[in-house]
Length: 239
Image (cartoon, rainbow, N blue to C red; front, top):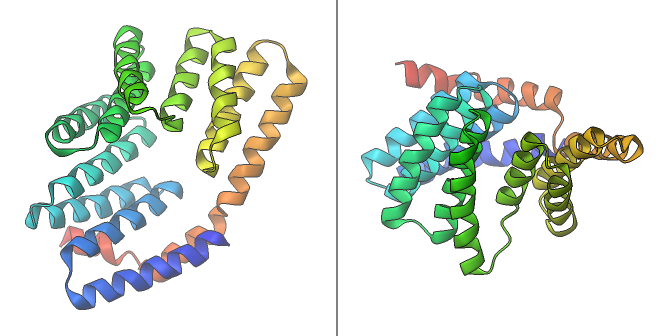
């Protein structure tokens, strides 16, 4: 599978940077591996690997890298449905990015915070943070599909399915990223279903699974992770 090939490349790169002793590159590569564990729903392992990456970045005072790794850790807690913890982490990331991050990444932190408020049913604060993200992105003149998808989710939550469809369609017709396309398809599936457009809902459901299957094969990925890593990072972190 594509993930098999990708992991082989990443694993070889990790071994190379370990041989050179480059903490910055080791941390960067561990972040990628942590993300792959998250995609496999091996969330405890993903956390351990991201925390190892964070420790390395703290040792070399890599502030930008630390914010990236913390953002990934926040995403793992989101997947674990520990939303209050994820919210606090994303707030910390925002504070760091305000000191040294790009305006685009600051806007994405606002989006992540808004998303957490959405699932915590604090709609006022969700809207407040989404609006801050949009103000920055409008000033930059960019379309950020992560933000558009989160706005699609938010509008579905509020029952504004027409608006959710607009955000989903905008992402689906413009992005080249399969993960963003997958998320947009799911948003549109929900919106069509809730408005009784069952034929279109089924079409989006089929598209969602088609894209999802094209991104990775979980069975092959699990075998690859277990074969290559042998949980060596879990052992190192626990040591």
